Image (tube, rainbow, N blue to C red; front, side, top):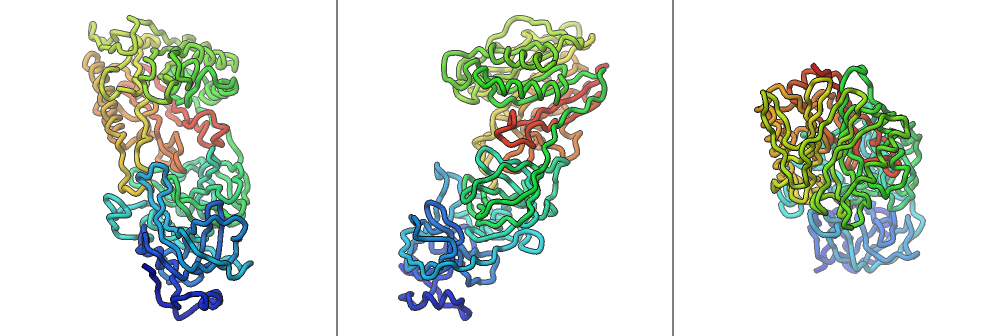
Length: 602
């Protein structure tokens, strides 16, 4: 089938160049191919007589933009043409396509939960005129098209491409960027809200973030329960070599590029190298309220293993000693076995732990002691062969005493024993309900009991299951599915049950539950873990500072500390210490920031 539309009353000079070449006498406009939605009304059909200017070229094709607009912001005036270009197509070429097939191309590897790209394939084309001026880019933001700043998609409950809910670019970020698919756009006065990551991506805001709802003190865009920040614009390196850009850097010239989609995200692909003023990187450290308070921190050390370069251990030690100022108790996640990701029979992490302890000592830190329980081989999830675990470091020079009780194995379940009105652990340290089905092939919670200046305190270190299998914010399924949450909620319920048993034995017990919970502070995971027994210290922070991790430009609080009431009333200071979120991803020690609390013990 050949589809076309009537020639508009007003035509460009470029139209005149191609009318004689159009066998039907009818030019098919790109905005008609794109249509008003996420999929073309001409999907899988053949179209003829398409014309436009080449705005950008990659190794697999080029972006083509029509100069005749329909004055409807809901429809894009550009699309991608899959074509082995070689050297025959150049930016600024006026191209006439005699015939092509419309395809909705899924760029994801597994073809699941991804939006599609409207493109032309099997194109029969010719270059009509070269060295044309590119079309004026569409200005995004202030003085241009306003970018939605709260809603990503609220008109579809199911599959975007199939359910065809209201297409609403004025409100929905997903529809906004779809309405610009393939088009040349411009962002003025951009500010970086991430640093360049290992994939050569950097996320920015237009107009120095004037349209952003919640920016942190350090320039990070922070999510809220009802706002996942569609105003974010991810820059990618399809046409340029992305420079190293620090969080907070300001762009001194407009960013011009085309809008595309890949890996579950809309992206702006700059066609010229960005010009910017580099922000200064500031080393953060904890603010100590006083030496007399007990300090407890949690830190995800991102798959640290004895086989890693010495510089990683030195980097960690710098963070512990100079950033966290050597807390009394430090709960670590993702401590791998001695040969790291090698899938061997080794599960011991003695070498990894010793290298950590030695590095801290060499940096002038205290002589920490370590507590951990070796997992069974490949039974605790995480990186295959890594056998990651939770490890607790503690200082003896500050009045902390740890007394081991009954050595526990990886499947040994620690019980709470009531003795003379006090709670004690049957195994110290011990794992909490390790045989619960929710912990199968998942990281196990580690519990330990300490004495601190005559007071008992329970420490429960967590690393709950990852959100990795959850749907992307800009995926085809809306709202984004979160299948991983069920497991985390079950894990949280198991830990909360353990907390209940401690409080039943000793109502005024001092309990700290902390770690990487891999979920938001408003989530069912956090609510289940908190129950009526604990308080989440995250709520002590102003909203703009509630982040310990940045994912695709969104600051979020994955690392949290929960306290029993007896401790919550005595919090003297709580802080996320931003040691990594402002770094280049390759220069950062970890993808998480540590979190620390200072407590006054009765």
